[in-house]
Length: 319
Image 1 (cartoon, rainbow, N blue to C red):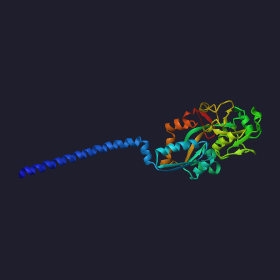
Image 2: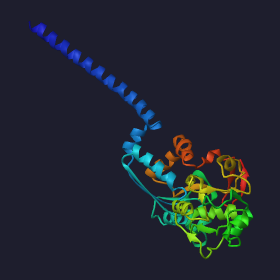
Image 3: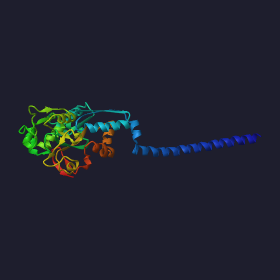
């Protein structure tokens, strides 16, 4: 009986050792498999995991021409990333560039290159900024629907914005006094319009109205008889009339082919390389979901669709 009891104990101990060995082998296999799964997760994170991991806040300011797109993309990004809060403010490109250069905001939205806007004393600050081009915006001259014109030449636009032409009948329109609705000097939209539509900077004429945002400009033009101004294509609707420029309509096809010259890149500048949260937001901006979806939906143009490119000096080259 003593022998049988010892044999049973020995058998039990042997079984326990075997099971322990199997357990250890299983652990090794699990480690190998988990390592593979972690690698896969790292290489291809899901939106859910990204949303759970990211947390922080982002403050962006600047271009009102770009603002509708940034706001819409920010809302979608926050839906997938519950720990992130994004606030988007206007103020114009100059404001956005100055604030990001002073580290008052995380992103400075601009319709113009920082080197072009921040000159002289601010040149060093401009050099510290990192450019993230997220789209292209085309700018069209727009009027009150009753102005009576369908298009204007470059010279006619120059004459209007310099005060040489003051009545629409002088350019083939209604017998109606022209009311200029302009943007402030800090506006990137104004800089784009002056650079590529007028070819010259203009002074603010007595009697002209100056508004800080594209949305207000659109409202004023639609409500003011004889009004003229300029807006990004993303703002156009039936309340205002867009004009052809030297016989070329401001359409996406004409912009991408280089036929319509009044356009600019939409920049989102950071002061140095962005932190993890800002980088994730900017990376999301460049995904096909946003570029083929939100960008096109809101009237902007994906930069990848452009058949021409433009440098900071304004030189256009064919890709």
